[in-house]
Length: 496
Image (cartoon, rainbow, N blue to C red; front, side, top):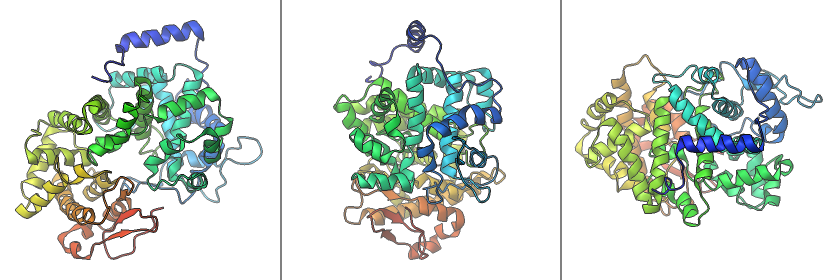
């Protein structure tokens, strides 16, 4: 396997890292060492210094026009780094944030929380573990798996420079969601309509251009910049897109090209994997800043499946996709050679089903009750070799549409009505994707299809996704040729 040839035995490698590190540098002078693991201590020892060191970049997120994922769990209630920062004067001159009234900047919360996640994972102690799993659903991240990520964090960041590089990349990787950074990038010729493309495109520029785009990058140590830019070569695959099976083999295309050019090694993949784990861990931080509910044991296990699927890329991108799907099918006790089971695996990935009994209930409620013409359409759009798998670029937020329709954040409602709404949504999306794919150049790699606005509509107007809503739906393109799939005749809000 490609990666296996590049990875040492975990225990041996961990020992070598410690040996080399201790012999050359002594104890890591980590500036974020915790003792009590309270929210107040984390704020003082992590958030305050990070906000001071990266004030320019972080302030980009303090903008009401920053892109926000419209998953139904979005909330402006609860604890908040934003409110705490509004009282902070990092330079003893002006506040980090000036707020007329208490509010949250959702992506600022998420970015700061992703850094806290990294700090706790690097720490690796029992106290850090207890803090990390606060609020997690069952099955919570096991201590064994927490330790696996801890060992990964220590490999990636064995010294101060790499430690700071992880923090910097956690901040930089979502700057493409902010109007300020996007405007700076446009000035040097970078125009990425999809923010997931933004960071690796910017970090591929000459450093003088990067300095113009990323606030504070010019002052960053050269060794930290080297580590960031090396890791960015492996940020060409979005682990979350693969985990949700949002698209086809093309999800691996950019990373495959980097592998073919010998630009990617095991160390840079480790770096990218860690950064994306910390990012997904912080996905619910707009609702709480204590604990990391999204990175429970099922999430970590499925991300590990994604990581292993990368071994197959040298054999072909289709093999990598099938490799991941096979792992999910095995865990759900499904047969990937059965067309219905492949669609079921994809649907389970969309709505985060990891339990085999829930998968069978979904199969009974959703696929076995479809009309023959609807099943034919669903299979054509979501099958193993057809529909989305032939697109040169996967649509984004497709799974969020179905999650919002299911209202899975409501734990009191039984599963059957949730699955029935998801079934309606799946047929709805199959019809819309068929129409969309028929448009000229619709599935080109440079024309992203964003369903975030549609996900918001699924949360606010779920009745739109019944059969009565089909006739009024249409496809639009905005002025930047960024595809928007609308769900009703109402005008969709701007996506930028």
